[in-house]
Image (cartoon, rainbow, N blue to C red; front, side):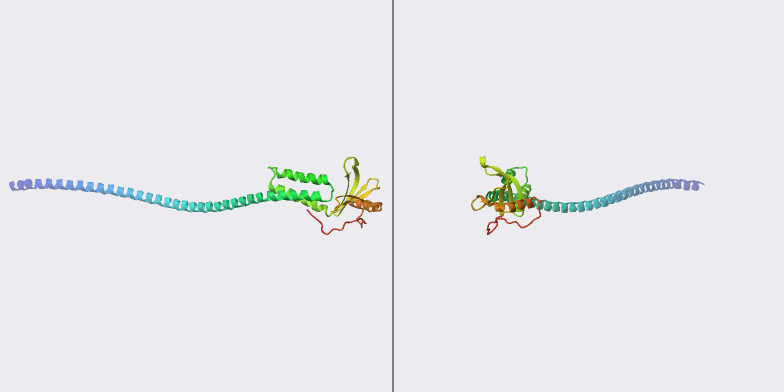
Length: 253
């Protein structure tokens, strides 16, 4: 009996020690399990962060590519616009140069027209001189463009040119001072300029060589009457027997 109790007593410490070791092992196992769970949680968190970072990186990369493409397109646009601006500036400079060159040319054209009218047959002088005076005034008018001034000068030249191809009759003053009188004028292009008194008793023509009026025989009265009627569209055109000068070349403006 004593031996049994002795054995029990001997085994009791061993049993307690084993239980303690088992409990320690369980605690360590639980601790390891907790650490493993925490580690896994940290790994899961790291995986989520990695995936989020990867997604963010991909989005940033896509945006960067889009921005790069946009930047390249804008650069091309800027270069194209710069080339267009340079071309426009060149055109503006060219127009400015042309305008500077045109003004002296237009001035010379007006001066030439003025000289031509002074040397031409003395018909409608007041009207023609007023036209030239208006052009000279426009030449120093800052609000009138060079293009408009040039158009007006060409228009005046065209009017003068048309005089050389038309037959015209009108009533106007002849002479100066006390000797001035109203007569009928007949212009045949730029070849001849005639006049006839209102009563038809006096006729004459402008002598370009002498620079003065010369009388005509009364035998030209009928031809002058017909010429004036044709010029006023009162008769159909027909051959007129009028004196014509011998001209080697016609001067035009």
